[in-house]
Amino acid sequence: MATSDYWADPPMDRYRTRVYSPTLDSLISDRDPVRFVDEVLSGLDWSEWEAHYERKVGQPPIHPRIVAAAILYGMYRGIRSSRKLEEACNYRFDFIWLVEGRRIDHTTFSKFRTKFHEPLKSLFRQIGRTAMVMGLIQLGVVAFDGTRVKANNSRYKTRTAKTLEEKLGALDELFEQLTAELNTTDAEQAAEGSPTKLPEPLADLQQRRERIREALERAKAADEARRQQGVDPKKNPAQVPTTDPDCHVMPNKEGGFAPNYTPVATTDATCGFIVDGDVLAEINEGGAAAVSVDRIEETFGRKPEKFLTDGGNNSGQIIEQMETRGVEFYAPVESSQPQEGNPAKRADPTQPVPESEWPKLKRNSSGQLDKSNFVYVPEEDRYYCPMGHPMPLETTKPERRGGVRVSKRVHRCRDCLGCPLATACLSAKSKHGRTITRDRHEPARERTARRMASESGRKIYNQRPRIAETTFGIVKSVMGLRQFLLRGLAKVKTEWLWAVTAFNLVKLARQIAILRADSSLVATGAGG
Image 1: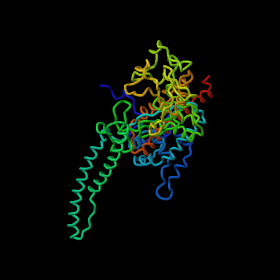
Image 2: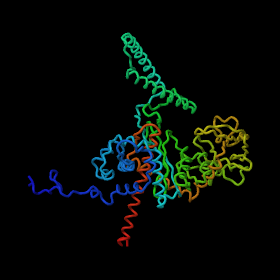
Image 3: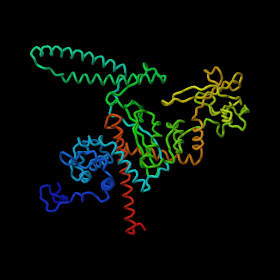
Image 4: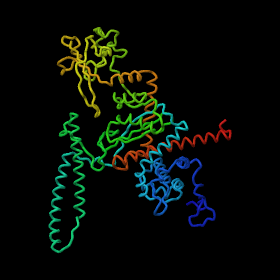
């Protein structure tokens, strides 16, 4: 057995009174990130936050900068829950230093994080503009993307219209039974002259019935939407969440389905700062792309020059919205016109493609000749098929795409009968010749396709995964935001705003630390 005098003595005796004790500040390293986080926040304007306090009655409140700092720094450290933040402020030196020894309870954190949405937007703007002044945000190239984050709703707490109707029927029956019992009790107490009060079980039951009715209406609306999309709701009914009514059942990134939200972020290419963020309660984030550009201009005073996004956001409508705003748009878009290597690309489209070149004509997923084999001549407003036959405009038809009404122009070939390419060109359903459709967005798609096909365009677009996807990797893996804590779209938007603000705050604090370290090296001559 080892002797007791072998082991090192503790630097502090738990029970001995010390004449000199270390200060709180001395417990935190000069290079600790918490110092730079506090420095950045201390230099910002908090008047918009302060205006929410009445300053009339009660004890003086904790300054909002202190509470916000704890929440933002906590998100950077992966501490998001109110109770964990309260614990950190009691036991972790970095948090104790940040809040200067204040004991902030979890209720304060919980209420604070949902109360200051508009001031939080101002804080996000101040941090972003500070980074822009330092040259860390340049808005030359930005990348837009979305991801899935689980809602605060169990995947097992979803119901179809059928199950909701059954549950509502059972609750109605129970409500009538309890009401009958209450009426009997009222009659007995009325004879005695005693007033009655609505019992809590009956009031709670009434609230549950209302929630089920609302969920049933959402389920019926979702079923009707599926019916319009050609899906039979009887065979594949919609599932609606019952805990958080604003979220939707969506595909998970890792597979399967669950109640989710779709957070989106637009990230600047220079140093990876998030320049805009939002949360959608739908699968497709394409509708938020142009709105993001508008918010960036509002926040920073100018629009981004180049906008990168993935193939899920390459609709003609989005492309035209970007062109209207004067923003270069980059997304995977294939030209509908014949490209190099396709024998359908010929000097005179009225001449047929040689029979020896027919096997090289591009096919679509159904095995038929693809649209890209048909040449459009703008001056004539007509297509020419691979055999050189004209395809004039026949009619226009309305079509809904992503909830937007689009006029679809139909061009038809009237020379398909007896055509040697008819078997390869026509589907089994084609009875009156091959048709090619075109809408007003087609010229914008062609311009984007040419940009993406250029060497410079490919070089610019290759940056997209590094810019956009790194952001979500840090938010999910480092900050731990894989499921929202709050419920309801409005509160979830605020929670996401806290996350992107914390992301930028820490990034700015790190850049300041790097610049200061470099300046110190230069001052001491160590950099030489």
